[in-house]
Length: 340
Ligand code: ADE
Figure 1 (spheres, rainbow, N blue to C red):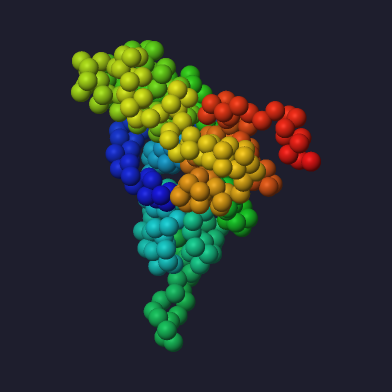
Figure 2: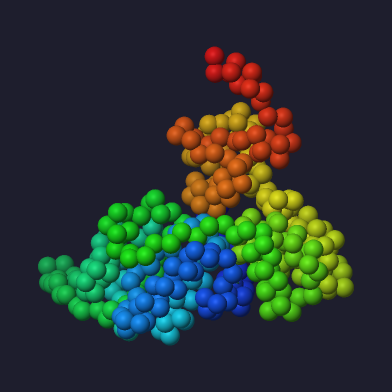
């Protein structure tokens, strides 16, 4: 499945994310360092009565990049225009967004690493000098015109900072990296979401969801909604820890939050490729998945919890991964024998 399809397969997320999304920095839970830096950036611009410099947000999906872009606009009291790298597929599409911005508006570009080169290059003067070099007309009669733009703030989001070209990255005055959330932070988020959605949930059930949310608020909120469904259909509507465990078991989410594809990935590296190293493309083919889905969606958390290591020669499963899958890790002697 491609990453887009994967995200599309869960259409309810966006709708619910909007209901649950914090709207101000004060409401936001976690990412303390990013929040501290961001609040200084916003406050300093406010005191100088200047537009905020362009902001780049990096990190795995579901950690709050879109939410922060909306918060920036909200805190500044300006409008936000939302688009994405793949959606802005030609220069005219970029021009029509830019030319409709008002002064200090936020222009949010999700998946900014997926802009094509032509569009990316016409974004440079817009970001740097607030001008848009338009091509008017077509063919031999075409002419160029430089159009002034209002001083806006671009907020770019990317799951892959490494894929961003140097010139694009350099045009962002502030670059923030979002990290996976702690269990305590996720518990607060689940508790807050349960209150907003009016779900009666026990503390140990909140804890159970937080433990299985792979450090990701979007996943925590999705699991919470599925637990609510289960509690309503199979129970009395209250989310107890037992109902929660049964609901998550039915969803095939294991005790540390891994889903079938995560476990299949580890199983493939361990069994088919003898623990690795295995290249990303080979691994993706084995799993019938897109390499980007593996790299952006599944690997970051497996690496974070120390189940997978990325080496120059490919992906390697660690001893922790062997234990989790229930296969004895190779003994140091036999590894030596293999190397000989
Ligand atoms: N809902 C989703 N992410 C959140 C966050 N970081 N803080 C509060 N509520 C959230």
